[in-house]
Structures are given as structure tokens and as C-alpha cells.
View 1: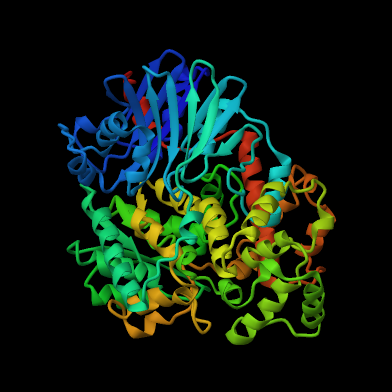
View 2: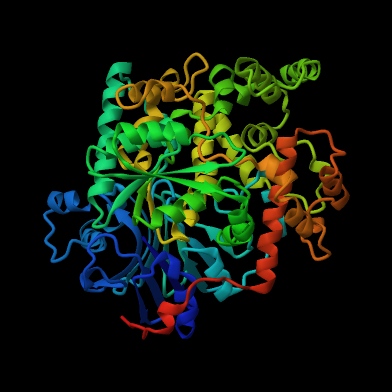
Length: 631
């Protein structure tokens, strides 16, 4: 794993120390700079595969130069397939050789996670590319003929000073994350998953090309019997785990939450790695899965570590954790993710996780209503009927799961707008409070996407899984884990996002995913081969945090300080009195929802304060003591 940065018609080489310091945590082992014509490429290296000098970047082969962040797990297989001869074991060199043979069509061959910039000096073409799911980040600034890209927003902002996009920030408050290519800045996009940008470095014209579209795999039914599907999934998951272990020259471990996703990955990984190290989190006041995680660790004799988070730790680090994201980021599970990554880094450099399984196989409870009702095609009359019925029912108790599913079905069906349906089904923040916005959210892209999804000839369940994969997984789940791990110089790998599984899972029948109100049916049945019985039917939790309790006790003072500050940003986005009424419980909503909304605004204010101070704190010792290498 590494950090990459680059420019076109925007000289930044004189600021190389700032760039390298900003990306130091992504690559503390080495750094390099390429400069030719109007193109500059920067690289910081976290050495994991081919630790020799031959793995240094920027890397050149003839007239092609690359800076690469990620791993191509099947690159040695591709060398054999295309009869490529190389003097090193570097997957970066494999990319350069395949580019000469296949051009950018090579991307379809990769099983990996990646973001890279490849410059063809002969063709005067610069390519910026991302993997199928968007695991490796890549942000792009464009203004006039100038282009700058970076692995992280903090460094990009420091060098380019883009303008804040207030409509984007309002959208963030409404849905809880920056949607797809949206960022807090007007001139900056988050390059989309499964796409690459082709830029002519002479004319500066660019073209965005989608090389992988997961929706196409939802249209391809697998036509496979259920027992065969379990067998095939088992084989594909084993292949994915095996590749992700064997393609590291350093020690590999697993995050273990007590759920079936990380449990499956751990169980399979133990077959390919002796003395596997596993890590889980224990939080006071949250549901404690450490006992369940221990059962898996004990079954497979892993070297297990439980990370016990105290409030003293959180009080010291909450602002730092949020600032690391370079944008407002309100997923509170980023907190335990950061701590477990920090603990893991003391023992390993590469960690496997279960990311992607929920979005591919239907792991969230909110998916259950979509399995049995087509909310995307409900008539307006039916919506009024559902809303009337909903109004006479008591609020669902989360513990009464079957009634809760019925309640949520009525709630979803009552929404008149698709955007209300989707945001309520996901984060349920400010749906119903639109009138309180001072700066209206720009929801045009989301609404257009929902209209497009609505017209697909797919089941309601497939539609919501597809939307979540392209939006929430990309914009929330993957950035959360990328920053949590990379801020600790730890590389996270996700077997469920392998090429083979991404091409297989979407085409499975709905009842393979959700059946009789049971989520992730096929994964639970596969788990019978690997996991203790009492773990298989546990509800989805992941690394939970007791956010409601924290917001009412330990975090109350710091949150109030930010929200009541005279320099707060949120009053320019949403009505200040409305937020104060929320703080004082004058608005009738659940305590859980109230806590999420206020934490969302708190994250916004922490980002804004850091933006004003323009401080990005990383260890600069390495670069102060080293000379700059120019390729």
C-alpha cells in the first residue's frame, strides 16, 4: 500500500516535502518523484510485496512511467498467462508489461485493489485508474488546464486550495456521506470505482471510461442450484483469501468482529497461514462480541488480541480520527476501526477483513423488506394508504424483529419520493426535515441514479443491493477502513471484493441471499462448514459503538463546544434553532436518530475547524532526514 500524488500543468515539485509529509503514513518506507514535460508523479511506499530496491516507485519501463497504490493479487498468474518475463517480483512491473501488451484492457484481468497513474511519454497520455469496488482512493482536482490527483483529500487541499462546495455539505448532512464522486470541494471529484480517466497531456482534454459496471452482473442470472452455489462460493472465497495472503512478503492477520463475514475469512485464512493473528474490539456500553470472536479464534488457534477502548483514549483521539478523513465523516464505527487498526499495526502490516459481504449477499436487516415488496414501483395511492396505516402503529421495537420488519415495510412504502425512501432505508438522518435547510442539498445526481435504477428490470432487493454497493460501500464503508488502516500504516485487504466474487454474487437468486427473514442465507449456510453454531445466526453488528450513550455523556461537552461555537459552519447550511431544539430534545425523534444527526454535524465542524487552520499533522521525521529522489 502506498500514497500517490501527481500533477499536470501544475508545478508542485518545489513543495515535495509537504506532499511527502502529508502522505507519509500511507508509505513510510520510501518515496520518489518523477518530473518530465508538464507531468509530475509523487510516490510514498509501504513495502509489502518485493521489498527490494526493484520495487521502488515511480517505476519506469521504456517510455511508460507509473505510480501505483494497491496490490494485484493474481499478477504472477498473469505473467504466466501472457508469457511475461521480469527480473523482479513486483506487481507494479507486471502492470507496466501488461500495458504494453493489452493497453488499458489489462484492467479487466486484474484481481486486486488499486489506484494508479500511468504516463505514456510517447503517446502523451496520462491514465488515472481505480479498481472494481473503489477500495483504493483517488481524488482529482481539475481547474482550467490544470489537474492534480492525490490518495487523500488533506494533502490535495493543502496544495491546491479548492473552493468549498456548500451544496455538497448540505447533501452530506442530509444523507450522511458524500455521494459517489461528490466531495466537499467544487473542483475536486472522487474518481469513480471501476473507471479510469484518460487525459491528453497536450490538449488537456480528458475522457472518463467505465471499465467495470457491476450492474451488468445483476442482469446475468447464474442459473445455479443452491448446493452448487455454496460449493462455488466456497471455492471462490478460498481462492480470494489464498491470493491475499500469498501476495504479501510480510505478516498477515485478520480483523475479527464476531460476525460471520470476518469469521469466514479468519477460518479460511487459518488454512493458509500458520499462527494467524486476529484482532477484535471491546467497547464499554456497546454490544460485546469479543466472546464470539474468541470462539472463532480458539477454534482456529489464532494469536488473538482484544482491543479494549476506554473513554480516555477516545477523548484524546476523536478529533484526530475525524481529521484524518479530509472531509466530514460521520460513520461512528470509524472509531473502533481506527483503534483495532492501531493495535494490529503493532503486530502485522497486512490485515484481512469482511468488507463487501453485506452489500453483495444482503447482510443488513434493512434489506429484508425489499425482498418481499417492490418499493421502487409503489403507486402514489398505495403510498398514502401505507402512510395512514403507519400513523396508527406504535414505533417498532428493534428487539421485536419480525414486527420491526413489518413496520419498516410500511415506513418505506409510505415515502412519496425515491430519495426519501433510499435515505431512510440507509442512514435515516434528516428525511422529513427538508424545510429546515438554509442551503438546499444538491441531490440531482442521487435522484437521477435512483430513477435509472428504478427502470432496471431487476428485483427490488437487487436494486437496493446495487445502489448500496455503488453508493454506501464506495462512499462510506471503504473510505472508513482505508483511512482507519492507512493512518496507522496498515494495509487492509477484502477477499469478498475479489474479481471472481464480484462477478458471481450479483447473479445469485434473491432467496439465496434473503430467505424467511434471514439475511445472508448463503453465507450462513457456508459458515456451517467453518464456524461455531451459536455464531452463525447472530444478527449483523460489526464494530458497534454506543453512540447514543456517548453523545449524552462522555462526548456531550466536546460536541456542545463545537455546535455552540460562534464560528460554527452548520448554521449556514441548516436552521440553527432546529439543531438547538434537537440538542434540547424538543424535536420528537428517537434518541438513536438524534445522536446520529448531532454526531454528523459534529464531524462537519471538526473538519471545518481543521480546514480553517489548514493543519494536517503527520510524522515528518523521515522526510526531514532524507534527500529527495528524482526519477
